[in-house]
Image (tube, one colour):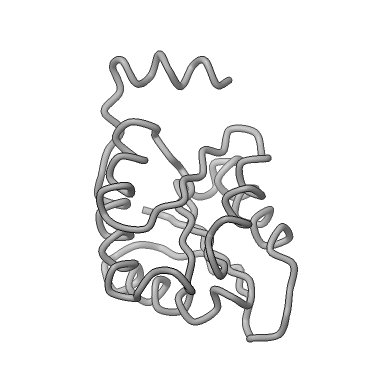
Length: 141
């Protein structure tokens, strides 16, 4: 899967870890930074990933900030983006199965690295269930 990823300064370390994990597991990663701990504005980085996913140049996106809340809010302002803030594997699975989330949001300051990687693993390996869930998604368009 081709996945766009970005973070602000609050998600810098986890972004590097998640990007490495994805590459090590055969995914193509388009890394939009940020590339240091210097303060940056999360909406700018959310836009980079959402533009990639929205245009179809990437199949999915992952956004990381301190809590994941800012990235989630910023991402969901973009058309055809269904960003889900997840804190563990169960919500990650449900976001894909029931909501067909195409952007995963994580918070580096609220989730441990192993739990985050487990959520990422589940999220990228879960398919949308369709059926009754598609009818509900259609109401969001």
